[in-house]
Image (cartoon, rainbow, N blue to C red):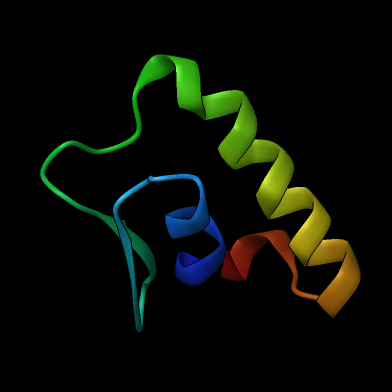
Length: 52
């Protein structure tokens, strides 16, 4: 997930707790994009929402 987010210049790193965002975090204008990426990746790879 973090690699996909970095394609959109969103600083993210995977961890055992999910995705951790860098110093900047997810700005308000990025939130719809992040939600859409999570939904698409979850459906494509069968990842439950609680694990993303």
